[in-house]
Length: 416
Image (cartoon, rainbow, N blue to C red; front, side, top):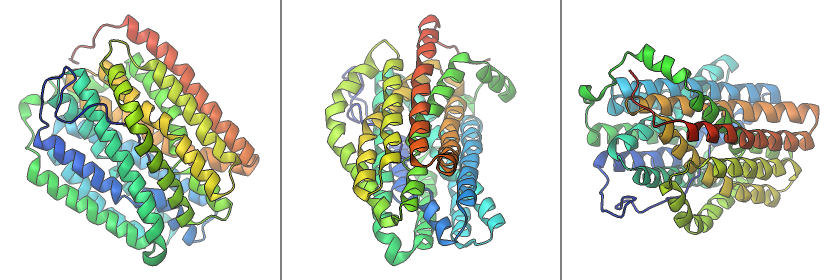
């Protein structure tokens, strides 16, 4: 899924203007994230792989939802593992699992095998996100620097996803979707090797003091986290449409994988154009004392409107325009969500909180194709447009009670 954000600072400068070089671990995670997104052909082209098998629309949407269910489980699991066994061991395990599971998905034809392989692929798909989030929080104590590095992280994810969409669209014809999935598996293997070489082993003294069960109970009782989860789920359901319901809509209109690749090209071009314009402004917002709830609300509305407009498109040009219009909302929503997550996360449970927040991405992947499938079946393109906009508006509405709660709350202490 396109998780767009813009860099909000230079990688060698802290938010207060002092020089701070990135540790090798951060560079490794940044490079590896770009690698597995840039060659991450599996998720964006999975609907076309399933379409080649002549499955029904209902079966395709269900398998895509199963991918999201695996993603949800993987987010929580990787967040917990990052806190308990360390970033290095967690990522190596998950990337090697990906290297084993993706070839099975490429070769599977039977529906039960597709379900199993897709679920496993979902578990490992976003493994680096909670690990990277926790690593950034551990490496940089200043909020401004964290926002800057998070911005570069999301930028790498987005550009990588755009590369995957564009290159995949051009290569799908001559190579085939199955070959692209094998390339994705090779990229995961290379990421595991990079992590093994450059990330330090876990430091047992940095593990949370309290038992995992207590940490989970405290996190699940955090009202601010719940509000952020619900608001993010709505906003990201709209963003996930770019990689789930958009291909379904395009396939319904008879447009192939190459046409879908052009939508990703348009999305990438908009990112490269808008990033310099939004860069300094987002940096100032991230360094300010106020939480970015207002910007989060605006981005949720923008995503609902832009991706809802896809319901009225019917040509490659029209779909490409909606993909480009979604970029400002994508840029802001991930920077704002990172800011809000940093404000509510206890220091000794950052991986857990990041993993729990990552379930919103997985939930969005489940809801977006399911919502699109339901809307297309019962009301057509117009209902799909209305449903997407409504979900975006709900995300914006939920940002306001979150703002009130954060203003009333003191900084969150470490969980005990």
